[in-house]
Amino acid sequence: MKLARTIIGARADVAHLPRPLALVPTMGALHEGHLALVRAARSRCAGVVASIFVNPTQFGEGEDYDRYPRNEERDLRLFAAEGVDLVFAPVPAEMYRTGAATVVKVDGPLANTLEGASRPGHFDGVATIVAKLFTIVAPDVAFFGKKDAQQLAVVRRLTADLDLPVEIVGVPTVREPDGLAMSSRNARLTADEREAAPRLYQALEAGRAAAQTGGAQPGAERAAAAQTSVAPPDTSAPAVVVAVVGAALATEPRFAVEYVAAVDRDSFLPAETLGERSLIVCAVSLGTTRLIDNLPALPSPAPVDGARHDTSEVEK
Ligand code: PAF
Image 1 (cartoon, rainbow, N blue to C red):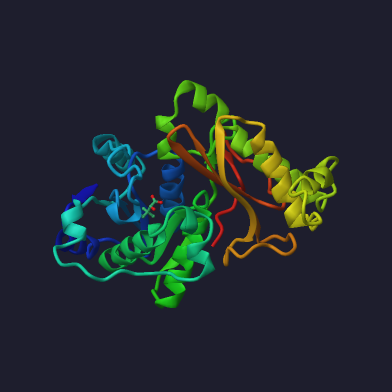
Image 2 (tube, helix red, strand yellow):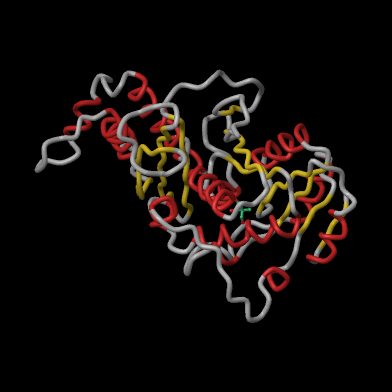
């Protein structure tokens, strides 16, 4: 496995790799979710490039850029064991040179609601670094986790809008046995917070159960009616599902809920009805750690191996 620290070095190494060529962009601190991306890449492509770069421009003021977990030695070992051909791991000054003034911005509700509203500027940072990685590595296929569903939708939009010749593949979320979605930030949870964390997934599961009955769960109508005491309750299936998830999250006092929504997985506009493109998404703070997760509103096939996946399919 080769390691490139510079853009020139990465381009020179990429020129010798077989195609189709995969890119797995990461910020390091690898876990099974990242390794699932590499395995999906390895199964589809002859050459695999992974990047490790904690991208400063996607962290807002007061967010955890400095505290973001970093362990490059371990990451390199794990990538090598998975058969990655090249790791691109630049320092920030290599990616953002003095005087850099160009930003890639995905606009509209897709980038400005939910995660975009909670983290202003976050998706500009993501879109900019992903566009740069695509021009440096020139992959045929790039792999992103479905856990960051809005990021995946933003990257798809960016790729379509700029006519980038890269196929974007979403890889199912990998979960701990208790359902908690794997994330580099989980390492920062205290024992008490770690115990509470799976309730996020359990709340989403309750929402999905309500979705499967079209919102006609016992107690679901009551949860919808509890949304407000002023306006008449919205008893459409998406509203009921959101209310069920919100009610389940509210039973965990350690959660500070940021948002719960039922959305279209591509536009991130609120779902008017529930279908196979509908996602239930939510974000909470737990102590100083922010957790996000999502589930498709419709049922998915059973897991296929030891780790739990949302679906066994790699979705394009
Ligand atoms: O999902 C991540 O790890 C990051 O947002 C990404 C896609 C590597 C861009 O920095």
